[in-house]
Image 1 (cartoon, helix red, strand yellow):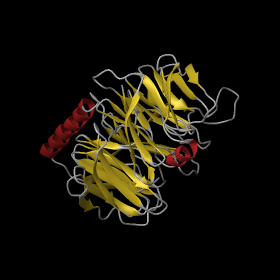
Image 2: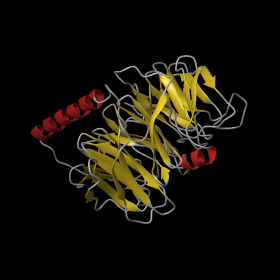
Image 3: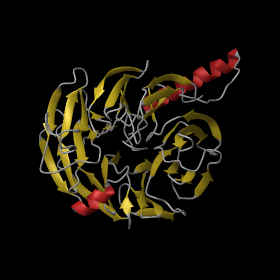
Image 4: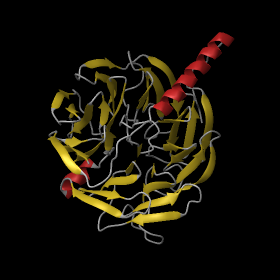
Length: 399
């Protein structure tokens, strides 16, 4: 598999500067997890779905406010007291920002273009970054919605879920496979590009590396330079893929194998550790990975009708949760409990330790929920608040 990246001749002083920057990068990523706020798909750059609030957060929850965006709502991101989501129609897209505490709309911005619904967000440093299937990556001021820049020289099909962290925004474009890139958050200038032969769903950052899993392949890079660290390649063909999660030194990458199953990697070495059976990347409690079932129970061929918790050390099933319902949106874990929106429009709150049902909340009707779950429609969290996109609405829940 071909990999094209920048070649640098670095002296000792340059090497020291790069190592220092990398240490700051890793340290900041760890510090950011102290009190969670959604900044991309599945909460954070690691996409681990883990939310830790310093204040108590447990059911019973109540809805604090609900906003109608007029089109199907995406997963939200958060910046400086505002929660920001995209509203996507058949060929339209708008961004809207709401005050987390009151639900008052701070701004609404229509984004010109013929969008097809495949778009996603990231936030960092007071900016929001939009990645869309037919257009270059764009940046907006999170406080006002003002356009800041449109990326150049990265390709127009930026349909890879982005991550923004410490002044850099990482994403990809569909150009002869996928061109991964790092851009300056401030200016949109290209910092590095790497050519991947295949297509994947999104980038993941954790443990000082950037990961890009795809069907039949997974790779790891140094975030600040684009230098490849490892590559896992199978001789097979595949399409689609799913965003991977990084947790406690392992990369949980769905849809990598030829049979569409996933792989758990030692993230440092790129060595496969175990298989990953879920339909998507898991979220995590202290000891379990929590994921949507590939089958409801052993021997049942119906996918997505249960939430299963498996021990991250042994792989043994700790508990499973099944209702007369199905699941497409990904679960997240807030202060140890599991939150998941079902295709029926019901929000389920599940005890992370036991799988016991703690609360059920009807958020929207089933038809609206189904459309909401197309693409990357996931839950968000910040400031002791859970955000649930469902149909045309974005709801805020808390104790």
